[in-house]
Length: 105
Image (tube, rainbow, N blue to C red; front, side, top):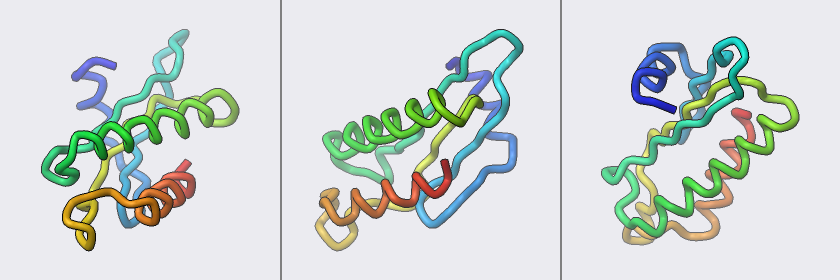
């Protein structure tokens, strides 16, 4: 997904919950649905955790796009991760983020 398309999607109204914002628009005619991910370094300090969240997002959105969701999607993290664990993403928090993402999809 190119930056112009991502900017276009970010202008739409998102579906949101505590941690995530999901921007979704139908793809251009004849194109397959695409995915954009925004997990900023400012909110998730460790690269390991950013990559883990991105893999989780890809897995959940691609399975949804294969079955029910037929839109271009940009997922954006809104809140910092790991406040109680010195910036590290722990299993409990990861499961919470996954559950919140499933609510949006």
